[in-house]
Length: 167
Image 1 (tube, rainbow, N blue to C red):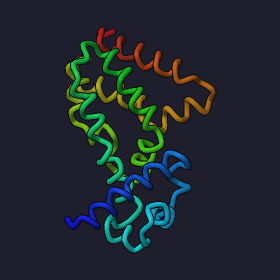
Image 2: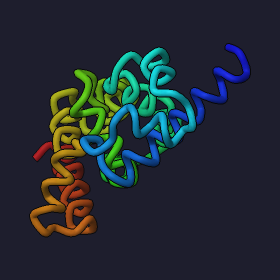
Image 3: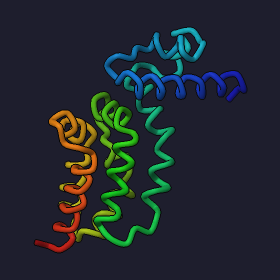
């Protein structure tokens, strides 16, 4: 990749990330991203195809941080679920964006997450049950209903403990 193309790609991804986190995915257009990155909108379309392609590229670019976390040696399902909740909450606008614009959900992107949870809770079904409550749109809904992040996190950890105990 040429140096200017690499710079443009990095600028576009950074601009998209900032705009999505600030305004939410619905309020951000390809034109907004191009303007914030200082490139023409044709550059955005040529590079990413459409908004879904741009969102996926942003998520893929930031996935490395979660993969590092998922690889950590969390000893219990509760510890892993709490860490995953923290990651989703910190990346909530991006998680919601990928949920809304692609067919790949966060757990689909990170088979490592499913595998780790399966080992900690005892079955793939239980792992996916826990991942369902960790979807960005679900967490945003609960926050909008007045629940605090602390209370949601505590509920996720309680569910993880219950699933791991086989109750």
